[in-house]
Image (tube, rainbow, N blue to C red; front, side, top):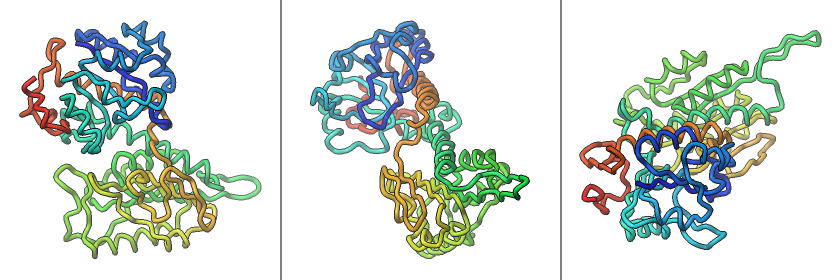
Length: 375
């Protein structure tokens, strides 16, 4: 059984889907592993490191993909500008593709993989079960995003983060407001606290209050006790119009009092909720910073520009994409382990064994029409 790890093509993507550590474990699982030349450079991994771990290093992407039974990626297949060939057109018929592809595929890509009967598994769609935690790439990568977002904000802020008492006077700590207390938000809270800031956090789900307070932050609650704000998977739900209005009013008040705002609010399968209005930004002090981690799906701030850093009324608004890639070394280490653990679920004695009645397989397969179970 051949496993291929291609080099990611997208400019912002520095991660890789396997490390020398996971290559060793894959070979122990009776898999033959091949890595595209230079695939790990941006993550601090040399071709020689992969070779020492037991992988073959291949320069020809077309050869690599066409001979692979399993392809491990980070991002969805795209057209390679160097060769003008689409990665999906190079995949071996009836192979398996694993990565972070969202919960649906773009129509063109879906058509390509279906034509080649390639089964596409996305770790974004893992069910929230106790046994899937070790495969939960969304959590492992979001954790890094929350950390990096705070460091980015601290770098742009024209103030110090901690309380400082000097001979020249006392410097008051920065005020940080975190919107969304999921994995990224909780890590942002912890990082801001370590830097000495005063931290407040908001989430529509009252259940996260204890987690927020355990990290030393003040939990900001919205008075909508009669509304269910959490779905069956534990994610935040879209609020009613009235509740959303109350939410925006509360957020505006705290945004205007903050030096740094980190937004992390997402609704699975939908555009990011608009939480920070233009008026709220106008009420912030010059020199303040907003880091919008929801920029890729529309942004939580009305003024966020996808992939850009802008200044509005003296307020810096950062809508950078792919924060995990900004910590590519550790992001790749964690992601590669998530992928390895998923592989362990679909392999037995070095052979593919898909159990479509298992939610791990059923929920992550994005194109069930391929009927992978009949392989």
